[in-house]
Image (tube, rainbow, N blue to C red; front, side, top):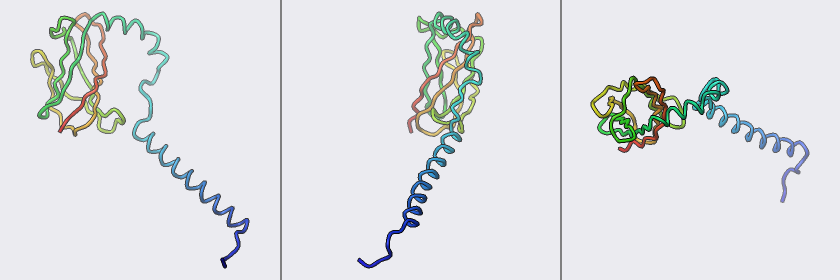
Length: 152
């Protein structure tokens, strides 16, 4: 084989190039990850944790369950009590978004349609989540995250 010899300078350039590519890819991936989901769910987790058990016990005492679906461009959310009857809600609101990023989050305008709450939505098929926030007639707060599979 006739060629130029492998010198210390070439080995250094190969090593710097190799690790430079690894560093650049890692930096790019970290920037993309933080840009789509910063990882902050609540700004003050310690303060929220101080009332978590009491809030959860009050919510569980309501005995409510939530079912949601999207069909023909309409979000339908049913909140029922332990007997299966529509729950006594003083207020309800929701955020609808993808599980992995907040870019497409929207707040549908839920209106009472008897046994369910409905809102028009224009969303793509895939995995979505609903962050439901409601208040019982007696003032008890109710929060629930609901997984939602939207089919074509």
